[in-house]
Length: 336
Ligand code: PEP
Ligand code: MN
Image 1: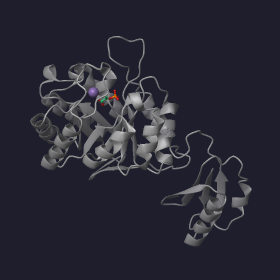
Image 2 (image 1 turned 45 degrees about the vertical axis):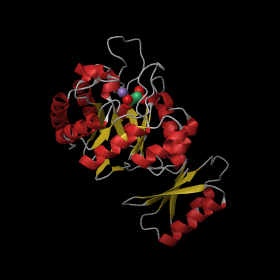
Image 3 (image 1 turned 30 degrees about the horizontal axis):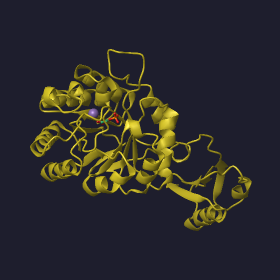
Image 4 (image 1 turned 120 degrees about the vertical axis):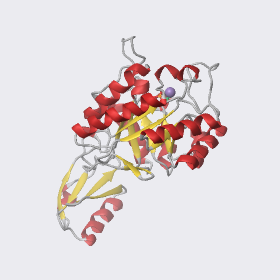
């Protein structure tokens, strides 16, 4: 449930309501809006009699949160959450573009492409050091060596780093080198990993599982939020359908649905969403038009030689063109 405080409720009245919540054994999540403060009651609050709060001074009303995801829901937190990527907030008026190769392949490769994507307008560098691959014989990523190269690329360009942690054990080393922990599609329902990310002090980019519903994505985000980490971005990266001309089917619907259901920023990955570089820009434009707060795009200097996902990787000049096209679409929908 949420407790909506009256406009102008005093700090003492808010504190009294919070202590009543905590006295019942629940956690109170305070959301201070411009108009009024909302107190979210976190946990299974079904046994609580809401009327006991309505008689407290300064309380306007209480409302049940009926959705199974509480902290992620807009009922609990009406204003958009901004996730801080250094100086570029994701979820605000400006669309954040994250870009880089699928995998870190070497020191000069990642530093060179980092400069290229920055030049084109990216605000963060992506690149996998721990790679979830379908085949155990495929390139598995450079591991910690790759993380070191990513950190060098940040040093050289100032771009914050987005990289995947595939297991609970990898979270500390990813946090040591990177700025954003990516949780991949295959791990969206790895609840131990979600709980560990909830305890980390870095933002999380949570990718939708390829066979997961929007509600399951929100429930996974709830694990991270319930662990105490409020900095979560959701990523639509395409789902499996019967269609064979593309690798996945980008669920454009998910963008407005998520924007309605949750305050968390929504990022689109048209690279994995299509699996073919020639469709990436069109779907990126569609994502911005549909209300996405950010894009994450695979870019490689020489896609035919890429060690993973070359078919969906853009050459740097194609990526620069995509950013220009997206600027026009962003302006058309009142974003920057
Ligand atoms: C990736 O970003 O390279 C990746 C492996 O993504 P996903 O988890 O969406 O397949
Ligand atoms: Mn990839």
